[in-house]
Amino acid sequence: MKTFTLRFASALFVTFAVSILLLTNISCSSTTAVTPAPNTINMKNSVFDPVTLTVTKGTTITWVNQDNFAHTTTADGNAWDSGNIAAGASKAFTFDTVGTFPYHCTYHATMGMKGTIIVK
Image (cartoon, rainbow, N blue to C red; front, side, top):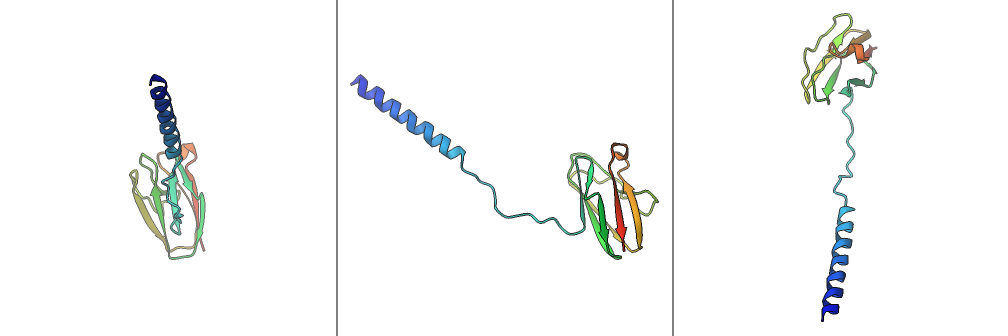
């Protein structure tokens, strides 16, 4: 009787272990692709992405802060200054003037957080 109980317990343990391994391989991720909004610049890891964006006159660009701390988007020539953009927040600016506009994050420019907007 002891041998039967021991074999049954061992078989039950193996079945349980295999079931756990199979369940851990189940994926719950979505297969829907996320398409970034047009004319959006992400701020993540203290970098503007994309670094350079070319748009036509009258286009609105939105900066989205994906970091856990504040950033700014500040034109080198003072054409705009967003002020603080909190973590998870966004700020938009419409470009009504043709030209090339270099800009930076006031807090992280020395770390290389710089970009350029080209308006045609």
